[in-house]
Length: 320
Image (cartoon, rainbow, N blue to C red; front, side, top):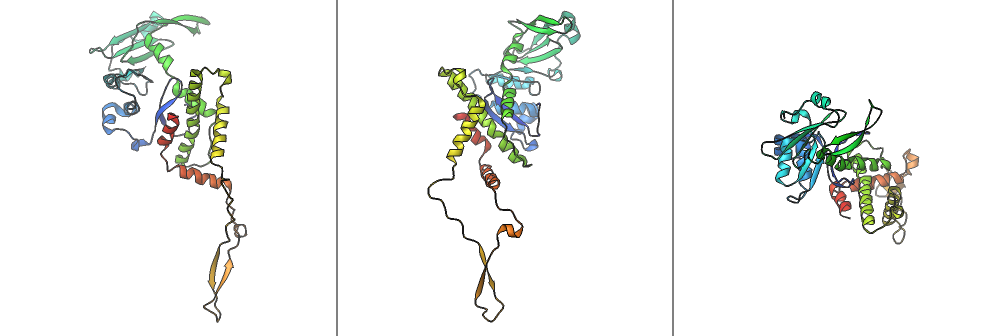
């Protein structure tokens, strides 16, 4: 990502940017099936883990980039009637004998080549844009090519370029994760703590707000509310903050009395050994210590929230 900060979060997103599920990368302790990791590799195991929540047999479409795409994963998804496509690394095409990049360059920009697997389930496409792009799919190939306008450095003008159907579907459906990252970065909640668990928790606060705002926009459009009348992300965020501040207000009922000063007993060393003299503990300021501040109270509240599952809290926002 443009601004990586050290913790990887793999997300299942829609084209609109709505996050449906996520998985925080934790190294060897990540919640992945050991069987899937051995069979499909770590990247394939991530895809199958997140795709597990997609209903089988309905025909949903799933798109991912070359970090995740492999032919065995596409076959497993097809068995569940999940239609998938994505860019694929050349080393994962199982030596598919497509035209070389040099041959496609001679044919010109927009040329393509494809091959279908012997079982007819997988199609691999190589398309020549500025460079060769490899794509694999279990549902779409080169059929129904369209023509798009692309900038040409050599001609210093826009030219018409043929585009295979799989490239069109991929471009239309990808971008949800990038959109979510962009929206979260606009009003990100910052924290000075270096503890990674606090940073992860605080990262999901704006993510929940962003997800809710996207759903709010969707429902507003269904009700016929114009875009001008809808709240933008900043207004929506402020409304959420104001609502939470009112709900969490400490002014409930009668104010509590101030706590009594702490004290401890000292047994005197005189004749009256049975008597105890009481001495009040000096205030913190006299001891060179700082009084508790609101920041510490807020930090204590955040620590209490850590006991709740992040995924459960996020699911509550998704269901709204």
